[in-house]
Length: 322
Image (cartoon, rainbow, N blue to C red; front, side, top):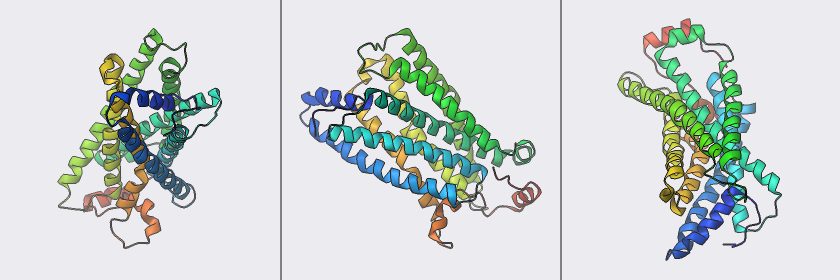
């Protein structure tokens, strides 16, 4: 491992600091190296997978209301993958990067990280309305609702990211003080948006979809889209919200602000931003009655073996495209 890090990045410098803190551990180098060895290939595979999905969603797959969400989610995950590859590269080899460029990259990373959480919540909530209130949903849904929601969530994520970063994140700056009132206010704002708005919606929508799929499993096969959304939601609840909970608790209880939770959060973040393409591949290739290049389109399809009532509702209120 390279001991010197020239990149002025909060994450990279925090890794460097943690490396020094782990000097009292008997096997410090094995733990840190294990995290990095697992994280780098995970992010690289995620970058490749998200890149392929982004290309397919842009130029190959027919645009639907849910594919629009997945396209934006893929773009957000690409941002996170690129950021972590740069961070770990800066730890392995010295890179001389301008301070302002580093700050911009960190803000963009937070931008992509928050947006991915918001988008998964939005797609789960819209699917919940589609399944449980089909008649009302088809009558009152705006034509380009998916595009409108994405256009709202990106600026919201930008606002939350800027407030959090400017107030709390640039810890490598000498003028920074985590105990400032604005940092506390920014932390409360971020916790409110994440845990009191998006997490309950995601948890409730996913739980309802799971219960419905289990009840109707004997009558008809669940739509692949329901399976895809459920798996995505579970992954985010485990790998994204768990890290956010630990970070929130560590802000007020400094004992949790330790090397191990931080390094595990890096690994969890890499997994969360890289696993989605493989979820689409697994769900889309569940059966092989169609060409394999159609896996993403099948993973986002809500056309399943439905009951006669569902089929009549679909014929009466056809699915909008976006």
